[in-house]
Image (cartoon, rainbow, N blue to C red):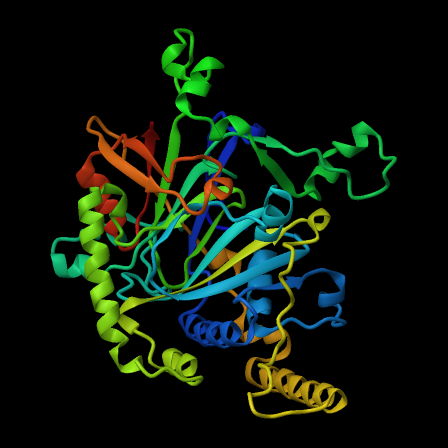
Length: 456
């Protein structure tokens, strides 16, 4: 059993009958040497994959040896087994650099494009590998007697501008799910026979195997006058109840840490870390400065050639390194995200080498077999050298509540077009129930997990 195995769970009223906010953060999930190896492997995976993402299947065929997993996949599978997660499909991708990502929910992008339906995974995860200026490596963590993170290790306070500039941003998770506007669950047929009865269709066993699918309510795209005509503006309704509170969890990036959350939950990575607290002018000034620095870095790439992608991997900017693996679990009934394919294992034959179909297939099979042998020699059977630590050695992070008497203005940028984000507005203007200084410190904290309440 995991030490102090609890998670903070907040019950709220949400669209689409989703009623819980569940975020788990564990330290010491993988060893420092494994962090480094997985970082290298993710770069190789990104280079050979079509769009950076892949899908792998779990289950009896894998554990009986009939189907092989790559080293990355074996590492992720070992984590899910420690979590007792039996999801049969896992989608994964990686990022190595610190970039801004606006608030969004992970969805099946192709299903949205083809059907206008928001389709979400079961659980989302972030595994932190190599973080520039990470406060605490996974083998150096200080814990309390009960195995939880201790206060002595959680006293990081950013005091200088230089420290702020070097800090990699946290992952921020909200209890808002699927879309920022309200959504309605889509009616889905069960995974078995078309003649399954209603009771069986809605049984707990069957529900577990069904993907979450939603359609954005049309009123999210109405202007205020139209909403007023239909009595949808709370300010015009004397009997309107107070809006549901939002919750925002702030999870610093730490080597060897695992973040797990509801697959439909909104999340983001702000750059700079306190971006939500900045005015529009301050954000613009930051972007202009960031653009100037990027242009200076790219001066030597004026004459671009095919080898530049390889050079960029070799010349990675360590000062902005925020290497993570992101992975989502999908239930059996979902068939996984459309268009995401298994890892091809080896890179395509280099440009300039022309082979006929028979020779091409033979060469690819040979190269693939050689790669599997290299991996087995390097990492052992089932890449056992890259497996995560036993769950008994994981440390569950405690959560610091930022709420108090003072408030803060919080502006959350939303990703994508109105269909993707489920509303017209491109940002959500909120009021944090913690002081601006406390929330700012939380965004820049190197290790401590924090949470605050937001109100519109």
